[in-house]
Image (cartoon, rainbow, N blue to C red; front, top):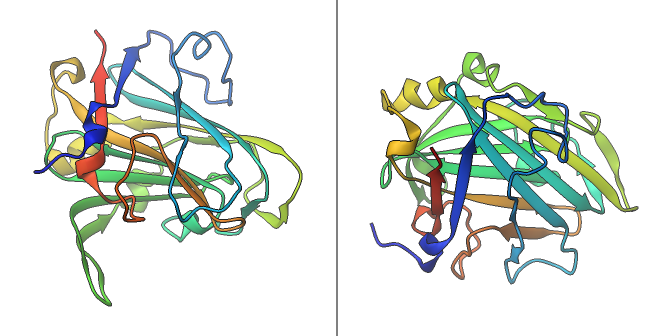
Length: 230
């Protein structure tokens, strides 16, 4: 697999002995000292709306904890059906590849907490058909995510005023292993991934690790490095 320059982007995921409460506590005792990454590389096709988006990750023996904090405007959320087109709403996304250069998962969650999660085995596009090989994660596995969202499930019409919102969730390692088999101790391997912010109202597309010229989040060669600290 040919890697883009983004692979030099590195985020260290710290182990926690206290699980986050999943109440949106960006600055609370568990999350407060955790280093944040910034999703601030806006694709050239974005408009002039550039929201400030930050994310933090933690892990324990059970799984990953992810929190996004967004300083936004023109916030909109109309998709309330899991596995629906949440990327058209004000949305944050975490793409993660536990066993590079293998398949990856895209966790797309709008500001109302509605998720889309697929297991991506072949992200090449077949014209008129979509991805060559991807599998929507089952409803039973989606229920294991435990998602917190600070806004209501639907926000419409769009909010033109400045709005801060948060999405926080837990991903059990068992969800990954359902598709990939045993992963072992996370600190013994390197994962790869990227983080995104998008929205159709005042359209914008931002990433943590830089993308190429193509407006396409599904480019694992541009994923950054995720290291699990001991």
